[in-house]
Length: 175
Image 1: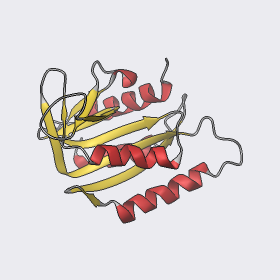
Image 2: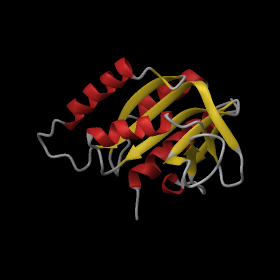
Image 3: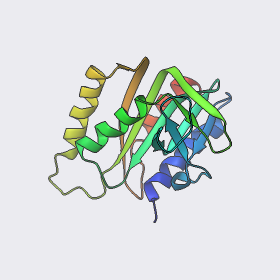
């Protein structure tokens, strides 16, 4: 199955990372051009029962998860959008296949890239997403001990339209 927006976003993160002079580490799942899944767990035990979600991409700063990016090319309904955030912030850490563990930074940035490709001409989805983004800023700025900055960025299979916004977010980190 092809994931063109995942690949575009992964390349954009890699491009910004290459220009960086800091020690940010970029991890991508296979749909974004990486080589491993990025699973998050509740508790200290790595098991199918405690695994809650996989993310598409994450940035590690000082051995902690600083940025998580989820890319949705098809399911862009409100319940799915909220669910991605809630399932992630309910977890404790990422444990990779090799056993390496990453806990969250105290200040987590969650970026959700949504595809505009399949929207109908008069769709109100982009307007709805702006309302969701504002709602999340108001209601979920802190959750489960994590301070959360939340962004919705837009794109489609041939163009990641919010790449300047992404560059600005990453520049603020020094990444």
